[in-house]
Amino acid sequence: MSGIYSMLNSLSLKNFTVFSKTTFQFAPGLNVVIGENGAGKTHVLKAAYTVAYVSAWGKRDSGTDTPSKGYLEKSLAKKLRGVFRPDSLGCLISRQSSRVPCKVLVKFKKRAMRLGFSFNSASKTEVAVDPVPRSWEGEPPVYIPTRELLTIFPNFVSLYDTTELPFEEMWRDTCLLLGAPLARGDRLKEIERLLGPLEELLGGKVELADGRFYLKHSSGKLEAPLMAEGLRKIAMIARLIATGALLGSGTLFWDEPEANLNPKVIKLVARTILHLCRSGVQVFIASHSLFLLRELDILLKDKEFKDITSRFFGLHVTESGVSVQQGDSVDEIGQIDALQEELSQSDRYLDTEAE
Image 1 (spheres, rainbow, N blue to C red):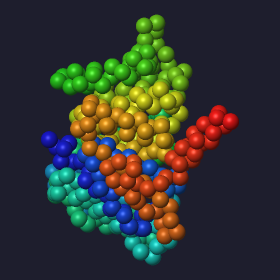
Image 2: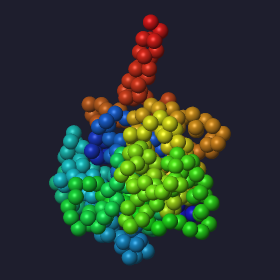
Image 3: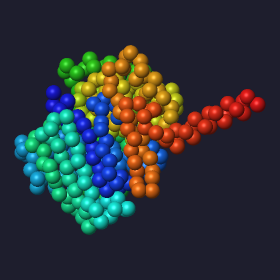
């Protein structure tokens, strides 16, 4: 039940990076952020992930049952620096309104979990929290970057924690989840159902042995670095399902799921995303792939997934910042140039074939 209450209802951004003032109204199922490179797609995912992470881990890391303003201000500032990697927090202020403070507010399904914070352009490592949530809840969120992480997994967490590495902190967070023990008990049936199509595509099962990942199949084991990069991304999802990190509740943030995947695999990824939504995971993806969006649109109209709620967000670069159009379908988010270019190329190709 706590997973339901910890779902994100909305994210409000004011003078945050490329956003002057906007509010994203999320669906409990699938949320798709679409836009050009540089339009802020990844920033939306990172901002929501930061708050979801602090909310989920707060009780354990603070050692208290009730959130405190002091702990949250320290924890949020630290997580923002780790996730966005700015020289200082003030660098996250919109360049066009640098004299106006940045404000971020996240509302959850459970009103008591509302969490907001602000900072100004002179801020180095500090934020001011208001409102302060009245309770800790939620499962740890999962963030999958555009790059697969299985090949860097060996000793990455210990190296990250003891040296200065130029990687975003979500890489460390996800490696920790990848290294967790396999789930057991009542969840196995659902895990096997979700894993079936993925393991069929991979041709085996993902296995962690001696600190390294392998694909175990009938003729032996294949080291993760020897797998195609696209398949390593599928293997990551399979492992996170097998450990229970992506099962039943919580949130998944996936930046460009289509990166380095061929159309056949993208179709399976789209179906897996919707299966995760149906199992109770709230999913957020950032994409500019027409193929993936079309596949999701086709599947959402199928009776198998008709009960999944979805929300689409179109990011449009303007002179005053990035504006957001949102709706329950791709048709409601305005014209995205990257998608139009793919459609235009298809038309030009058909015209040349007809000549």
